Amino acid sequence: MRASGERWRAPYATDPARTRGRLIAEAASPTRSDFQRDRDRIIHSTAFRRLKHKTQVFVHHEGDHYRTRLTHTLEVSQIGRALARALGLDEDLAEALALSHDLGHTCFGHTGEDALDACMAAHGGFDHNAQALRIVTRLERRYAGFDGLNLAWDTLEGLVKHNGPLLTADGQPTPRYAARGIPAAILEYDALNPLDLRSQAGPEAQAAALADDIAYAAHDLDDGLRAGLFDIPELRAVPFLAELLDEIDRLHPGLEESRKIHELARRVITRFVEDVIGEGGRRIGALAPRSVEDVRRADNPVIAFSPAIAAADADIMRFLWARMYRHPGVVAVRKKAEAIVNDLFAAFTADPSRMPEEWSAGLGGAPQARIARRAADYIAGMTDTYAVLAHRKLYDATPDLHWDLPSRGLPLAEP
Image 1 (cartoon, helix red, strand yellow):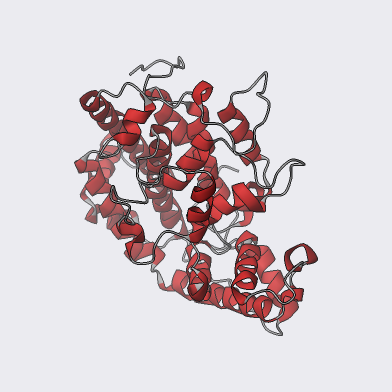
Image 2 (cartoon, rainbow, N blue to C red; image 1 turned 45 degrees about the vertical axis):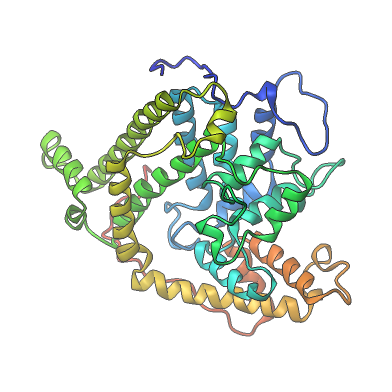
């Protein structure tokens, strides 16, 4: 491992010069690697721009300074790059995976996904990871020579498998997919361009997944505190956070609350990032991988939290689940957002012509499953704002998603 800013690539990193290529062959770029091109295509995609107005936790109009899917994605990207650089991975691939990991999320955050999943129960369900794959392989329509973004195999593999293998060694769905099976979109693409669903993802995808976890833990604490959903003293119920707060009080006695919140968030990120670098170094040293394929064939991820930090992360998420994600105000808005998604799905599947022509084309006399999937694709691509406006066009009354956050008047960002 190198502590300096010098870029390097370890032998177990994914080498862009040895990528497995693209589904549709393209001439190499004289100025960019394949992974740099993938990153750039993701940033310029329509789905990426829409993340600006998609919910992270709070809906779009509850405050300009709360995190959206876009700001969360940028934070994940920064952490992912830091991990990749420290561990000798390909930074461009790690960045591309971090920037694409939330492309498949719907309007209204996990509420929208849960609602669409229920609506699609008879037609294979809805999974945001599978939806991200549909976006980058089919739904984006920007290029003259192909649908989607025609990303490199290594990027697609990392996008699908960043949370681990989808199949066991004997070909059965892993626990995450055991009850419902692997989403059809993933299986369909895998049949066309096999993604090795039984193996671990490459190390860059593993780093991006950990970066996502780190960003969630730190920044949802930040948003929840600034929104007034819980107070700093309540965080002392989490031993890891209590230690950090003691350190802040010792080094900066009497610090104003808004600065203390920031100091806490940055310490969570620093401790978690340093832990991943240390634990990753130990696992890599034990495995001694000589290529990225050695990483893929390993029994366990090589980029991971230590047991102690994994436990701290779980404690933080349990706290956030009880005090933020299940806060009565958040739950009340979630129910209203769910009603909007349900109404839109019912309207579009009953009469596909209510969708724009590019979405309704070819659905006359189509099987209900095809109509339902098209409606789900359309709704999933909506921003929070667009979904509300679409509902107002179709229905006489639209649920009001506003609610008064119990904010303590803390500044949410620099002026």
